[in-house]
Amino acid sequence: MVTESDPQGWIGGLVVAVIAIGTGVATWLKSRSSARVETANDGAKVELVDRLQARADGAERRADELFNELQKLGDQRTEDARAIERLTSDLAHTKTENLSMRRNLRRMAQGLTPERREAWEQALETDFAPLGPSEGR
Image 1 (tube, rainbow, N blue to C red):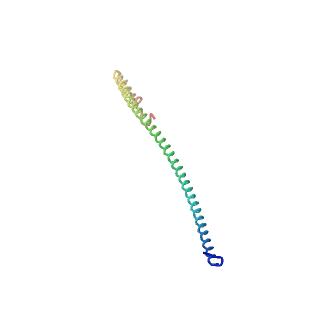
Image 2 (cartoon, one colour):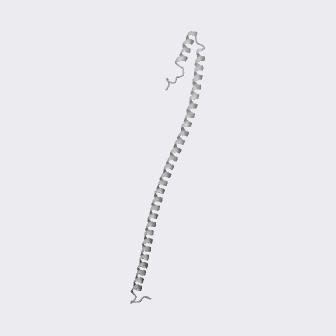
Image 3 (tube, one colour):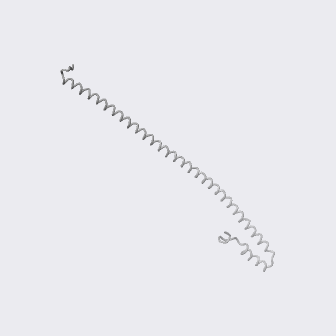
C-alpha cells in the first residue's frame, strides 16, 4: 500500500497511471486511424467499382451499336444479293430476246434479193450488233 510518507510508491503509482492513460490514448488514436484508413479504402473501392461499372456499361452500349450496325450491313448484303440475282436473270432474258430477234431478222433476209440480202446482213452485223463493253455503258 502507498502512503503519503512513501514518495517513491506515490511516484511509481503516478508513473503506472500515466503509462496506462498513455496506452489507452495510443490505442484509441490507433483505432481512429485504422477506421479512417478503412473508410478511405472503402471509398476508393466504391469509386473504382463505379468507374469500372461505367466503363462496362459504355462497352456494352458500344457492342450493342456495333451489333445493330452489323445487322443492318447483313440486311443490306442480302438485299444486294437479291438485286444481283434479279438483274442477272433480267440480263439472261434480254440476251435470249436479243438472240431471238437477230434470228428473226436473219429469217426475214432470206426472201430478199442477193444485193438487198447482203445489205441486210451488213446492217445486222453493224446496226444490230450487241453493244460492246465501251459502247453501251
